[in-house]
Length: 224
Image (cartoon, rainbow, N blue to C red; front, side, top):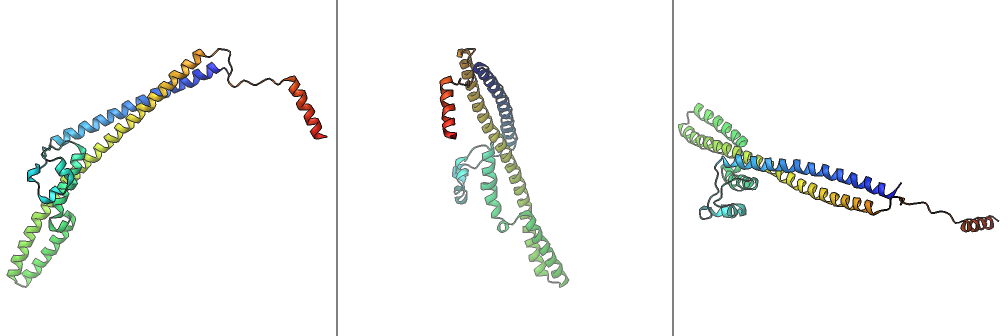
């Protein structure tokens, strides 16, 4: 095969592959842009603003991201993750010893059973105390439910933004690879045009008749 033909084939293949990588990069960029814009728009509609630095409690000041985003409006995935885990999450742990919505359901059921028992025993003082505890647990469970729901929604937004971020990283890799292949293809075409048309790729070297005779003689002597 001619060297020029081989150069052209490899260069054309590299150019086609560079084009495909460029298309993939554009698609990933579009996905990243959609994810970022969607997350921004959805979070902006919640109108959540981080507490200002001077209003943070000592416990909240221990959360580095709350200090970092102090006073800012929540509009990005990383901000959503911070607010969910380091603001809502911290405050939820302070309610009923950090029990979840599901766990507080068990506490409610236990208190109701105790109230029923106390009513059967006509223990009015115990009934009054247990009802007070149940009222507190009911309010705490409702608060936990709202907190867990908002926290879950914010973390979902954060996860969606991470997909967008990774898509952007993938797009960058595609662009770099496409650029490298494009440069190699250009170099290949340039080399093809400066290579003589008749130059072969890895041509077979002709065997010199003298060398052939000598080689034959050596084999005869070796066999003898």
